[in-house]
Image 1 (tube, one colour):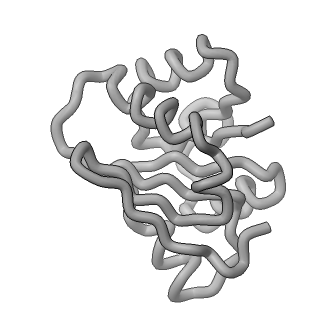
Image 2 (cartoon, one colour):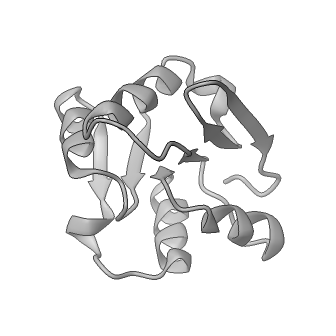
Length: 121
């Protein structure tokens, strides 16, 4: 079962849609507001959760600081969207979880780029 960790910047309405779809969702804004990215990353690794974020900093933590990686990190790179639209994007990616497991995923409406995270847990 895929478990998600929604970063603080992830829109709450989209988070509610993901929960309503039956996914195991933990929102940083509810569980641990104000945590540093390193702490969020550590929680994702410990609980084997995919990080869903709009924050580019996780790539630096995994690739440049070589911190342990969670099963996947999904970076949504869209500046304008309806409040629930990010849930649709995440659900579309989760339709093929094996493609994205162990990967840093950059999602835009036009394309999806993936990069292997060598230290995926």
